[in-house]
Length: 77
Image (cartoon, rainbow, N blue to C red; front, side, top):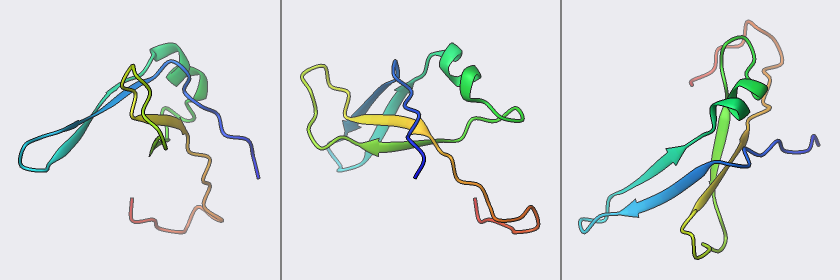
């Protein structure tokens, strides 16, 4: 399995509203996104941390390395 390429300086904070809805506010450094871009796109995965540190970064991001087996395969996303 390939080692994950984390977006180290990202800021991802989950906000929960009174009605139970949530959003994740994200900030990504442009330099890191440009470094992992392929063909003009950056595919990232956002995952929830097991423990939220005091700073409030509730999630982390890393480069999504998924590659379809062939170009003809249609994916739902």
